[in-house]
Image (cartoon, rainbow, N blue to C red):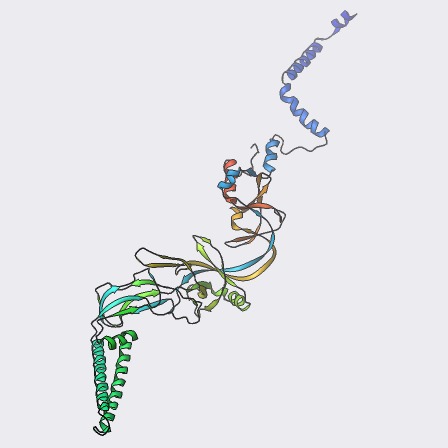
Length: 462
């Protein structure tokens, strides 16, 4: 019977069977191409998940992209970058008005001009530029060629000799006894003596005005010889309401003559410097005047910092605001303020030639920054500028996390040249340990580790 059924099949039936077999064979041969495309959505739908927009991405690399950038440094590496840890603490921040400034000399006080008291020739120079000298110490020796002083000495010596003669005559007349010589003669000689004494005193005072000292005047009387040379000494200190209370030395700032040079009376011989007290000259703008006035009226301590390179040094506190200039520059709209700056000697040494040299802590021309306190912000996260790294719009700190450092972005509220106020927005907290110094080098090491700048798309396969 089966044989009969086969015989009864039409030719179209066998053609259809052949097509089905051919299609099945082709599907089996290409299943590597179409089968994964059917399985992926079916499996996802079976798990109740939506289509993944990152399908085909390397998810391990994507996990690295979302992780906080960090780096681990060895102990030697930390030493090489000068790493200093800093524990973050909440503190009050004093906002200051910062003014550029420079150290200047006090007009009429810091410089002493030494001039020639008489016409003469410089025969000896006791101190040269840079030497430190005490008050009363000789500076110059002049051989006198001043005619007025020569005449004054001659008249003084002649009056002194005449006085000696009159004294002898009075003594002789008094030894003769009464009755032999009239008392009128003795009285006339005594009047003459008084006139000579008055002249001698006046001529001696005149020589003091010419620059001869009292000891030299007394020496003329004693030796009966005229002075051929005089000594020009260092003047005494004059402390008029300043902070220079202790004895200190002058410095020869400028030498204006040479040995053998002829000088006239009044010629400048040298300029001495007295830097025991100086001034800080600050430059403020017209808009700053009100804040400066409020700070001084409120008794807030004004401070200053010397600039070492471009970095401020240690603060000089409790400075006195001396005065504010009464003129504003019409072009820059700026005015000057002046602070007292007490000085101190930091080096005092002698050389083999017998000279002495001193060095003051502050020097004219030294750059400064004046800091005028304006207001206080309570309970702020205040960091040193060395703890932050600017990278365009982003600002980072590096928090220590065990043996490595994590890069933490922060929001800066305010900064000056020394400090940065960071917002307390959950990025860092009091008690965290960050890199107080060396943060920039840690940042560079992290960039080098990642092969350049930190790529926000690192780990994606585009």
